[in-house]
Length: 257
Image 1: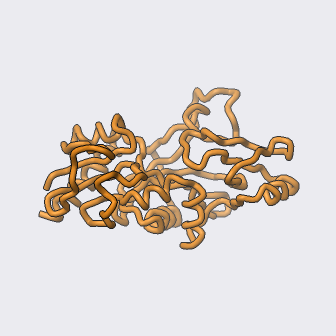
Image 2: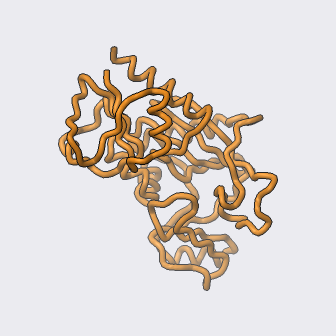
Image 3: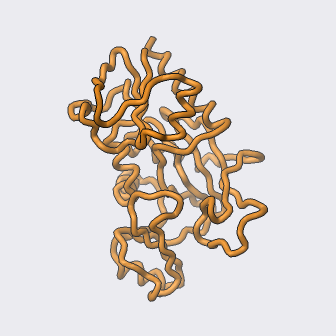
């Protein structure tokens, strides 16, 4: 069975790394390609737009991550609505600015998400006062994190996980609200125990969106409450994580032979 990748960006570094260990070819949204499920396995790496050749392609075992599911995952508001329907816990959220003002009146911090599809904190405005509140399609109440994880789920099983930790040389003037690489946060895998509640929420988040795989960003609070922030359908992968995806995709591909 031939292996193909449909990347959200043709120059995707993660897809390039997978090609090194698994082989396979990349296909474009527009190009000379026809889906032949009896002979091919297509790995959709974050592509949420219907390709020209896929208008009649329904979810198929030989297509990992249908674009309809990816389009839900990459849009934070759509994803939160799906999570609510399937009782996947998330931070408190609203589309109503008046509700967000009420949170501020109660002494809570509000995250204004001016972009529904973004990475690395882009489009985020942190409001601690009403005059800092900006118009946005989505507002979330800041969740007091005890620990934050990224859990990789493939076909209903956890294949890898890391914990977000602060570098020792993190910038002194970093934001205390946004945990991204620019603010000194990295994913670490040493001395980590993954709580069962985190595992369960990660699996449920991926399945609720109809995805075959995804990297779930979630956190646990001091009380033990777990919330899901998002599911990444084109996660950056390196080192051990590349090996885990290689093994998972290879085993799935071989299951058809």
